[in-house]
Image 1 (tube, rainbow, N blue to C red):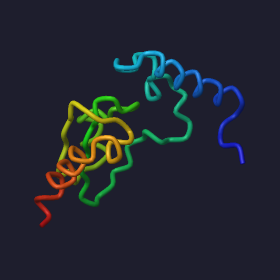
Image 2 (cartoon, rainbow, N blue to C red):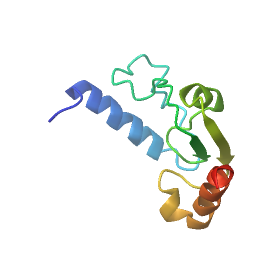
Image 3 (cartoon, rainbow, N blue to C red):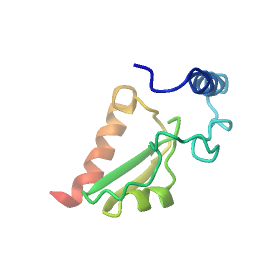
Length: 109
């Protein structure tokens, strides 16, 4: 099943490849929200009401801004930007990830 058209798939691949060519730097060319091509609504504010915690890892492809996060999760109980890690933080930085999970849900114990 194809979720995106051929052109959108190529553009997504270009974005990933452009990011990989700038290892160690924030991806300056990857802006899925501001390009106007956000047709799947992945980055739309949803207004979830369950308690939510967000840790933004420095090398994550999409780093959710705190202002957007607060809109998307009205019951945000924890937000933190950390200096290490990426999308696979639990695997690559397990101590940091564990510290973040504990800090995030400490208020719910």
